[in-house]
Each structure stands twice: as C-alpha cells, then as structure tokens.
Length: 527
Image (tube, rainbow, N blue to C red):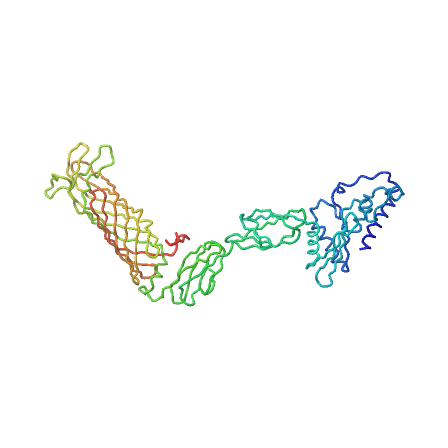
C-alpha cells in the first residue's frame, strides 16, 4: 500500500516540477475533469492475467461518464495535463494537508484503487483497497472468481454498484425472457442488470428453447437478438405389421418402431411390408406435436381377403360411381315452358285419352342414369360433400297440355331428363368384417325437363324444379381397404305434390383414400 501511495505522490511531483515554472494560473481542464476521476493501480505476478484484468476493467466501465486511469502511462499523462500551480503551503504561506490528500486535491482525483491479482491457485483472487479523496483507505476487500475477466467485472459491480442494460429482441416476438432464472417479460424487452455475466433463457411455444449468456457493462445497453428455430414434430406409425418400413417423401426411414423427427410441413408417406399391400397417406407435421397414422396393412392374398375394420376406417375420403334406376309416381302438374305465356302440363290423360275431371292423374315414370357421390367419413359418421344424379327416360305417355291460347290439347311425353343435386347429406355406418352397411339422410334439389310432342302444337320442353327430402340405406363390400362395391335403395319425397315420390335403386363401385390433396380432416372429438 505504501508503494501505491508513493507512486501517486511521485507522479504528481514530477509533473508539477516540469510545469510549475511556466504556470502562473491553472490551465484549462479537460471536459471530463468535472466528473469522477479514478486511478487504478493493478499488480500481480502473472503479467498476462494482469493485462486481461486491466482490459476487462475498461470494458466493464465502457459507458461510464467518469474517467478511469488504468495504466501508469495514462496516469502520468493525466498528471501532466491537469497539475495545478504550486500549492501555497509549499511556499510557506499556508498550512499543508497530508501528502496524499494534497495529491488528490491538486489533481482532481476522486478515488484511487489498488488491486493485487493472484492466479497461483488456478482461480483469480483479487485483493483491492479503495483510497478516497482524504488519502485514507476507505475499504479493503477481495474477490474470488473463475477468470481475471470475471474478477474485473465483479470489482466494478461491487465498488461502483454499476449497472447496464440488455435489450432482448426475437423473431417471432412475444418470447418469454428469464434472466438468472427470474422472468422479466416478453420480447421485445429491456432489462437493467448489474455489471457482469448473466444467463438468460428465451422460450416460445413450438420453438426450440434458446439459452445464452450476456455480459453487462456499466452504462451500456447490450443488444441480444435471436431468431427462433421451429421445433421438429414427430410422425408415429401405429398398427403396422412387424417389419414394415415407412417412407417419407420417398425416403426410407426404416422400420416403424419409433417416432420419426421431421421439420414442420406436409409430407407424403408410404408404409410398406413384405406380403402386405402398401398404404399411402399424407401427414402434416406441427412443431412439437406427435402426429399418429394407423397403418393396418392388408395381406396380399387375393381380391377378397379379410381385414379388420381399422384398415377400412382409416380411408376417410370415399368416392362412388354407379348406375341408378328411378321409379317415380308423379303428375308433373304445373311443369311449363320458360316464357311469359307458357305451355303448361295439366295432367296425364286417363285410360280413354280424356282429361281428368278433378285434379291431376299420376303415372309411373322410369328413368335410368349415373350417380356420383363424394364424401368424407370419420369412423362412423360421414358428411356427403357432393352427390349428383343424371337420369333419362322415354315414357311415351299421353299428357294434357294447356297452350298459351288457354286451350287443353293432347300431346305425348316422349322424353324426360332429370338432374338431382344433394348439397347436404349425413351418413352413418357400421363395420361387419368387409361388409359396411350405411344409412343416409339429407336434402336436395331436382331439376326436370319434359319433352312433349303434339299434332296440335309444336314440340316443347317443359321444366319443373323442386326440393326434396331423401332417405337411403345400403351396404358396401370392401374387396380391399381401398376398393368396394355398393348396392343402395333410396326414397325421395318432394315438397311439390306434382312430383310425387321417387324410389331409387343403385349399384356401383367405389374407392376410398386416406387423404386427398394433402388435406387431413380432424375427427369429430377434436373439432
């Protein structure tokens, strides 16, 4: 400590002797003289460790307004630039304070800090003493740290109660921030912290946790920026036979024994096993979520092999195409042409070719055509996304038509066309081995065109449209989990009595798929 005080006094005396002869008044002080000026005397047996400690002190105090003299050379320069005139006590005109206080007062020093660094134990132990403006030792203490840099930051924090700030910014925003295990808010956030190193954790749902460390310097705001990486999701194949392999975008990921880590996105998957039919599907991987796909592959033992209901139920998208025969008991009363003064169908004629005396007479009309159905089925409940029938007939029935002149004339119904659209239907099904009986209910719209010829007027096409309520039941037989045959019976009741009741017989083929266009619907319990 004595040596430290000798350095202070000697430095001042030398500088004073070189400048006092030319000084009649105090020289102009630098701008920083009005702020705190601290002289650091740092020593130790390991010169390299001392230099690291010295430079770390400077970095820890990077934002300080005060002026910190960290080297002997810096101190000497400061003394030369700021030494005042010879004190009056040197001339015997006033009493002198102690030598140390005289040095502090003349140079404008606020503090002097003596540090002795010892790294012989493998750690950095720094003993320090603080000498105030009176020239007295106001505090002595020591710091034990892992490295010279840590010791330097610890002394700055302890001596000056120094703080800085950390500005946390992330992409995406709204990540929670913890510093030294304590929550401080969500990004973007500014946190004021003591000088030194601080551990932080950034967390955002479905993204990988970010851990890091920030070193705070006095008066400085450190920028901490991170871009999150989305967590991988998992694909798990269940119910597959032993030895089955899973392919993701045509890449073999091996046997389906454990979950596969995949980045978020939509993937084409295929499950293959020797002796079994392969299954294709699509899976959307969500960050941090396990996506499961059931793959109860059916054995390759012919077209009519047996397999469990799960093999069928996993194929939710169902397409049917078949032949439909309609048997309709109707009068088609009020069917008319599209004009201001239309031809209008009054009724079918009676057995003698005459006009019915009261009301309209029904006849049975047969039509044949195609029907297409596209639906999505959960395990038991299904929603028909599209159902359409187009039927044709040639009834050759005698009809009474009221002409635009108001006269009732006889004509012949030579052709009928019917387009039926069913925009909303729901279905229910059960599984009995490969047989899947089902029932359907829904509403629809019928558009009918009637071609009428007569010797009393030119050929005309009369049209009629009406809504209906439909009920149907049938059974599907699955030859494989993906292909089936269907028979169905349905009945449709029209809101207009003129169209009567329609009985529909259907036979067709269909296909079932687990996924269409990469879309994977949620089951009812998750909706």
